[in-house]
Length: 353
Image (cartoon, rainbow, N blue to C red; front, side, top):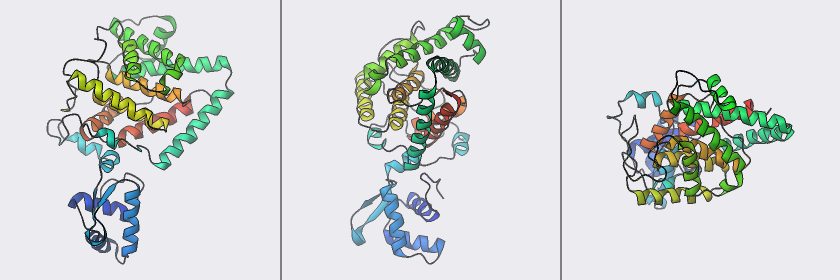
């Protein structure tokens, strides 16, 4: 069986597996296969299951009547669960991957979350909004500061920064640098604080995302770190993967604008945030600081729509990197959105109340 991407029943999961294994398949063959697995299943039942898979966008149908055929859709590749342990047990140089930028990704990144996942996110956000409104002004300020400290620490740690959480707190609150660490590490953390405060103070700016929004956040995050500002003009490589982003400056501008257009056309703020985070990291528009930028622009979208920002405090750095690599190499969002759901739940439960 393939891993179940949408809480399907066993027959529907078996149908997906059969189509994955056999490519383009006639409905009669699907019926025969399902009857062989499950016994006395009617054609009407299988047709209903296929209708569900079509509605979910997991399969495509061509032709009509006896000439109809079913095949796996690009959306299935986007949302299917992948056995991470088996995937990463294979050396990076031996994995079967898409090595270059997929310009068709903009057509695939739609309805990232299932209906149940959207409902859960909305329920959690309603809890956050109720807690936030009930909190006195001073209490809000303290919680915002706490979230900024946690985010600045963990986002920097994901990038290899060795400050611990208590050292980060002292640095942000008292500008007290910890011994045994570089100036660059302190600058990285303080730049996170600056960028997060800028986002919170200018929430309305991010209701419509533009390439300039993204470049402005990158500039704040990388100030004083010797990192070139603006869109890169050279090739970049990513540790742990053979995927290579676009190296043409004009194409980078083009896909960054397409990213903003795609996000601005979405209604759901959580899908906006996840799509923007994934694509900014996938495009790698800057010489350095791309994932840092992607995390903060994601929070910018959430806050511009009155959604709870993430702190990433409980995020496992290695798992975060695996989720990104799965998107780079397979254009698959399943693990990243799982981590997003967990972090959003964590943020609602642990802040502003």
